[in-house]
Length: 411
Image (tube, rainbow, N blue to C red):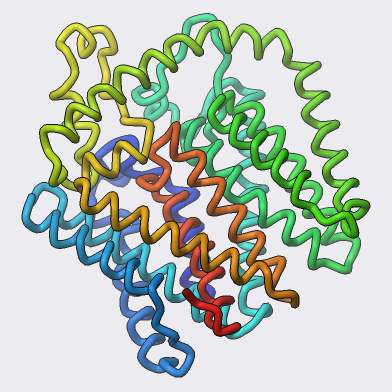
């Protein structure tokens, strides 16, 4: 189970997919490596739930997750254009979620492969991101980036690493940051702590060089929240890594200050203007289609709502860049309400688990921070529609749910 989950997450992170282009990079949607994981994930999830049914503790969270999945499938079957993609979306999410839940409920030893996989992917993507910045070009995905991330003539290249886009990459780094913190907390060997600090340091630097201002703001909110919530008894233990992160940010600001100010001048206006136009179009689409237009159809519908002058001015398809507008546009108002109820119950479950003292508490806190990161980031990017962040969200939620099952605190 752990190997299957880890392979799927790795493919999602290393193989950028249809959140840029509807076409597979391999030229055939049936050759898409992530699509190949749908069947084994769905089958393994069903078999494990049947065989290990003694671990199953049905709850309100499970009911809402399954209702949301069923709603998406039914809605898209009726609307038609993206039924196969929706089935893939649902199967991958549910497969990751319940396999991870069953791994987490069995104990800490089965959670660690997931932890080390995410840390390894963080190191790999950060290393390539820094190389990309040095070369000022993403050699592997240059063609995709030229279509999806137009850059000013005098601007600097923003790193997107293997995710091939700076905004999803920034969201990814925020979402996986708690995993490095988790390794730092649970490790007793010096080299593992050093690995955790190295991963956190590279992630902070890579996030800085993504020039994703939305991710910067979310990162600042998370750091401020962490400083306020760290218990006094552990403040000394937390002070060292926090100091290292602060030093890295200060050094980066000093070294890249001219570039940062220039990038803000170049990009801030167009970024804000683009989102303002996109959000107005999304509101208009929601008003005209309260039942939704179908999963992954938000950007297409939004183009229909744009005034011709804006379509000509931008010369490319705009993303909604706000999941809280994208979801009601695609899944309808009913789907949005179900999703909000599901997320509230996931947070409630996480808070209840985080209050229980014991070896599972750091894992629950890690999961809560990761889920909070993607939920905050979703205000400026369609985070839940991007495969890497979407699957890591369900893996993190599965860890949380498994701990709740094992402690009989599932909501």
